[in-house]
Image (cartoon, rainbow, N blue to C red; front, top):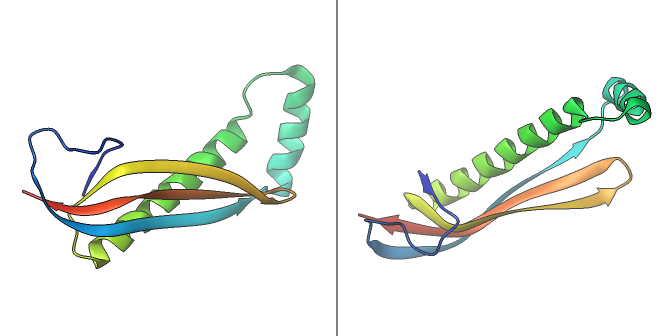
Length: 104
């Protein structure tokens, strides 16, 4: 699956638009990671536990978007975007979306 953030794929011709595709996940904080993150706020620096959690969430959302595109018969996604929002205290949604297409 080719995934790009642009409207075109260099060197490829878009043959067919399959439509909007998306994938999402909602991640919550883990109590153990919360304790470590709380300690990190005292000394400063990157909170690796949350960085890893959000990376996993992005990968899940992108994977679900790809499944949606494959289900529509696409072999590429153009205009891909990621968005994050807080859905409740200590929980965040990651959504990946774009336009599914068939390219040569």
